[in-house]
Length: 335
Image 1 (cartoon, rainbow, N blue to C red):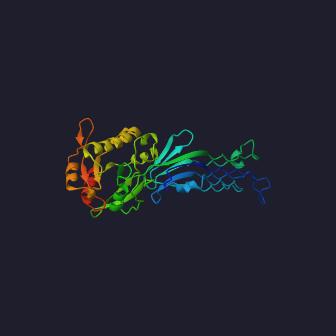
Image 2 (image 1 turned 90 degrees about the vertical axis):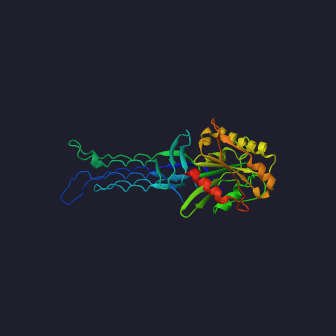
Image 3 (image 1 turned 135 degrees about the vertical axis):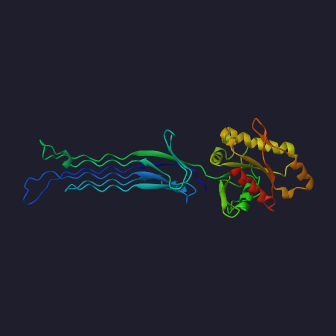
């Protein structure tokens, strides 16, 4: 199950209390103050980790606290600082203030960090308060309280290529053939209920990541069907591949209509998505007759005011027809 949005509470550690202490030595009957400062409280830090893929761990733990700083000690000894709490999140996690929705950090690369709550400063011991007129102060400060926040974590998958299509267009079958991903595949709509990521090995030493986005339907950008929850995962992709089912007739009208539905939903969510390089891929051509394939080859697509043509390719994930050419075309678009 893909968990891609959670809310948690965090609290950094309190600073340790300063110490009230005086020197007590054999030949120094009235020693001065030597109370040490309290230790600093631990910080709460978010860190991106590429070994994680979902936010499922946060489903079972909602509260994260760093350790408090230790109290100061006599002999001018500063208390030990509290240990930090490091919260690991998948790459692509957006850290937000849960109340305002303000974006605090966007952790994209492995190792990216964000200090979400700083630990409280330790209180000063009585040695800090000694003056020429007050040589035996008996006061010390309490540590400063740590910060408390409610945090929202939103995950947006990071992939080079986004597979976009209507339900049952063959996206899951395609990603299972060109990568090691093993999504659930069946001959009915909405088989895919969560995005799947697959690493595609290209040529000898290259690779790219493909995201299989669950099927979009008309009205998806308003939340219909699986809706906005999955549209956001297209935002970080570099190239969009529109997968259209080639088995329905008549081609010219239906296929352009399918494409327009998808374009409308992407634009309704964020028009910038349509600025990405695109290609159109007709799937399931192994089921077509030669005459139907001929009809399909006449369907042309264009985009933008200049009506620039969009690359079109016909494939069969079942037989493997043109899959090599598809990867070549995707690689060219990525470059």
